Length: 380
Image (cartoon, rainbow, N blue to C red; front, top):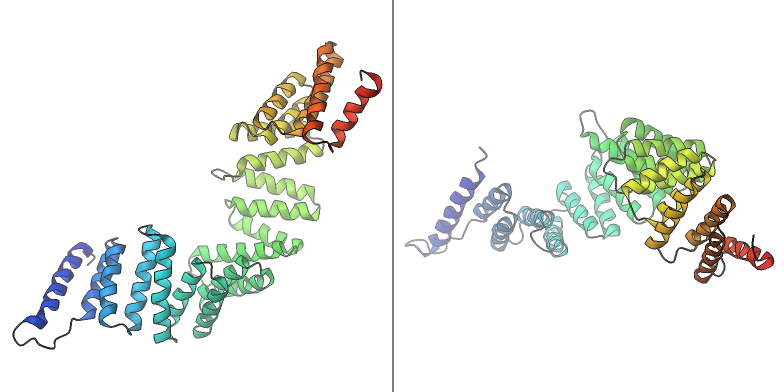
């Protein structure tokens, strides 16, 4: 009835009584019952005491070391310890691996044992071994989604995207009505990503468009869609995908970079006002980023806001004193202000900026050309 703490206490008492039975009159030869410790481990797991469950299952296994089910339960308990962060994750997973390996050796035809063993191998980054176990599990029950999806994930981790594509496609065929919706979401996303990684951009775009239509809040899928369009050279598609990524990017750690990438794209296409808006949003989300401040300043200068541009180029340089591009751009901005206010000190600042850019990067072609103009005429 779900009273797990009370159940655990009663089972502890039962285990103590059972352990002492052999020492009672007439009890010679009686052995402890591993089933009591097995039940205790189950009660403790449900009481969120994964460490206690491990101890109980270890006792059960000590009493019946060749019992596949008891070793399986111990392996699951160690995996729970890893998930609960109640021990070193790697140590706990390696303990789970040892117990599950015994379970599989003792019961090689048990689908669940083999599948769980594969999952632990995958978590330990033993992807090739994991694939072998997932393949065994899939052979044991050909209608199961998990081993096929997990095989695809393991192939992806190994960079074998063609194999991953096939497994994700098969996983999609195994989803049944009433299944957890995350199954289709995960398999469809993996399928699209494997196509993208193989540079099958048309197929990737078609599947990513389906994915974001069904799951519009998945920012990463929008980002992948934008990247696929970029590699195809379709800037209009990239723009729409970036809009979708930003619109659904609340909480996404890379949101400032999305604004920045979008700003650079708009700037290149001549939409300076749009670029300025995106760079400003990026700067609000991530102040003091040299790259973002440089993009913001370029947009401000293009809009005729030269003083603002100089301020933000200087801020970019403070954020990254080795930023040769920002020094060159600052020099251009000083020259632009000179043409308006005719303050010769701006020319000195411009020349100094070009020199600094070349000191950082002697091969900076733009800074070199700008500096040479001064060398030839003394003033631009």
